[in-house]
Length: 108
Figure (cartoon, rainbow, N blue to C red):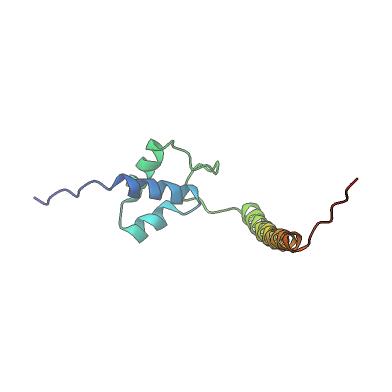
């Protein structure tokens, strides 16, 4: 009789749950990491049952509208990241400039 496989570590199970919630497919993860898809479904159920997307199945592909929305959100996210980086650099530049410029105080 074959020996039973030891249980997966809790950190591994949690990582699988997080990957599913991030949008990865259960069957894809099962193939990639060599575990059973039903195990991942059980871990999802134990972790709260919902994948957070509102879909009935974690393997359901995105509809065309969802795909378009995802593309638009990713584009906006990249733009916001670029704006944040520009503002951070500008803030650092102005801070460095204000340290170099002596402030004149008037005695009244």
